[in-house]
Image (cartoon, rainbow, N blue to C red; front, side, top):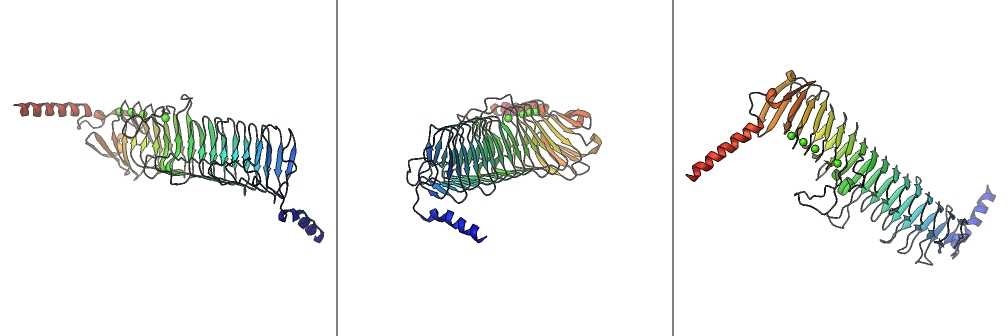
Length: 455
Ligand SMILES: [Ca+2]
Ligand SMILES: [Ca+2]
Ligand SMILES: [Ca+2]
Ligand SMILES: [Ca+2]
């Protein structure tokens, strides 16, 4: 045992010396295997070299302090990097800067504190794994995959970033069981992204101003499966930009918490006042499955704003949706199981939409559901007409209460299905005037008043 300790202290001795090159090769050729131990202040640089392998051993410390105009590790394609010790950029350059098909494993610490410095920058086909206990901390982007496609990031550790936590191009795949904290988008990816989260993905508040768009996840299309936390302090938890594949539906499956000023929104191309905002709209379908235990919560904006496309929200028993929902253009479906909670009004928008309640909702008091333009259907699979205890009609709003206490308000729905039987509004409550005659009556009265005034 004593002998082993002695050997270890001999091996550690260079740490205290003013070493500059403790990596076995500072400018490796193609295919070189580089091992870094001790303290190195030059880094490993050959931007033309392919297939270079660099291992920064546990306890080793590598930086660019002696050559601050260098990325600390700067190589070309097919690099294989393992950081078990510490890798630090002391300048505006990146800690790790690679090109295509890089394989990077981080079990130690990668640090690039300058506001213009990325932790890991790479292009197509990056495969990056941050192990539990591994950290990337960057002044700019934690992982900058730029426009590179087909990259995979697996984070079991920690990513902290001054702008984006992880930025990928198309066909990116992210598994997060750790923590991603960023001042801009925590994750920004393009088309056909796959994001699985059991940890925390958090865009934190900053001082860049309220119109600076900072989302938990910002993608164009793809899949999100969340059982952890996806949060934005400033903007949307999940935001869809315009997509080049509007025929493909994106799917979000949530059994965790999705929390933001807004919940899940898409770019509609319009401001809240209806004016054009200059952005291209996302016109694809988004399907949101909020499972038991799933919470989607908006603190100031909409919980859901799904824009054009045939969108869907499926609220399972034990799910919670807090905030308003706007399903927009397209033939949308908003379906709730008994035991699903919705606090906020639901607007189905233009199109032939379907609002569906399955099961018995007991004393649940829900808000206003608006079918909007188009011929819309509301369906109560668990109730018959004889289960209705009271109906009211006021200002085009149908108030409906069932014998078990389930109560809600409906407007602009043309058909009500109870059990398997469908009713028009006039069939359901013949004593109540229909919307169209009401409108005609109103305009006729208005016309009379106008005539009287003219006399
Ligand atoms: Ca949509
Ligand atoms: Ca609609
Ligand atoms: Ca409609
Ligand atoms: Ca309607």
